[in-house]
Image 1 (cartoon, rainbow, N blue to C red):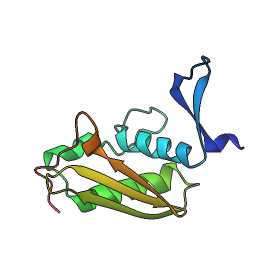
Image 2: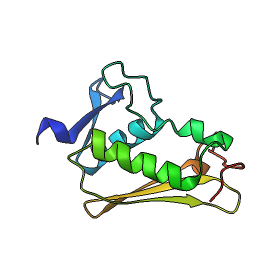
Image 3: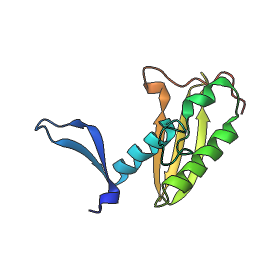
Image 4: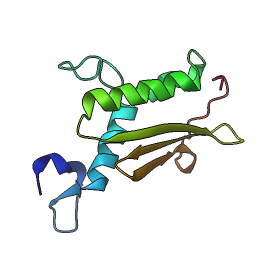
Amino acid sequence: MAVKNREYIFSIDNFNKPVVAEGEMSMGVRLLELIMMEPGSNPLHPEMGVGIRNYRFGIHNLHDLEERITNQIETYLPMAELTNVTILRTPDKVLNIEIEIAGNVYRFDSGSTANPVVLDDITG
């Protein structure tokens, strides 16, 4: 398998070997990193990163967020055959993101985390 389809996770298995995500799982890890990364975190690519937490405070709308995610994927994950980015807002205003790439749907459900992303002030 090519190196570009492999992502090392900062964890080790029961045999003290690095945990490696491959194939679709590696794309999921890369998408999550891109969504969570704050712009300016990577000095070689200062515009890289969606900075999802910046969208909590109502300075953008959901369309802006979808567009930012789409642009980031197209720029920094050019090997991804992006089909669609959808922002879902649950009745309790928890953010969920669905990204379709090459027939695979990656769902990021912040409601299942300890600190869900709640978008009280973001407009639709």
